[in-house]
Length: 179
Image 1 (cartoon, rainbow, N blue to C red):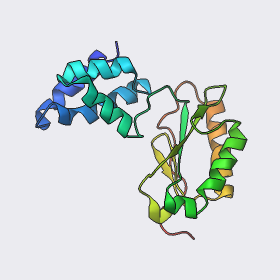
Image 2: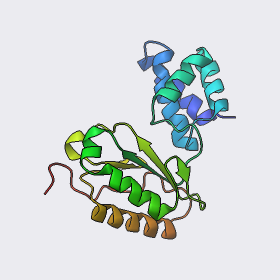
Image 3: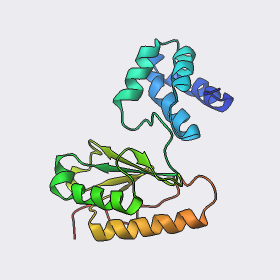
């Protein structure tokens, strides 16, 4: 069952805040992904039934937004922006560094299931490009040196943590203009 009782109860508790069933769709999808790590076809079907929406409405939202994972991802989901500002500031080099270090291509997960590497179109951090989203945290103003340090930290945390590491990282790189 894709929609747990906990998710259903949470949605019922906030339903009054939304003018239509369709408006509740994104909070529902976020709750599913937070609990399961991704949005399965089964979850889309159950979401449509729960909100009394056509399945096509749910599918169009899930497939439009890159924030929704349509297949399982690693414990650490690395999403590198390669849009114009990030690209001009070196995201292509960073992508190649990640592919080489992890021995995977974009859209792939490492054999141990620890990392998934994704290329995303825009993370809305153009003023602090290039940017990498690690699970739910942004790392901005990245260089190859900072990326290597970050990956070393993530590797160390994965070795010492048990189970799911989503949301356990703190952005240790300053936001704002490059120093």
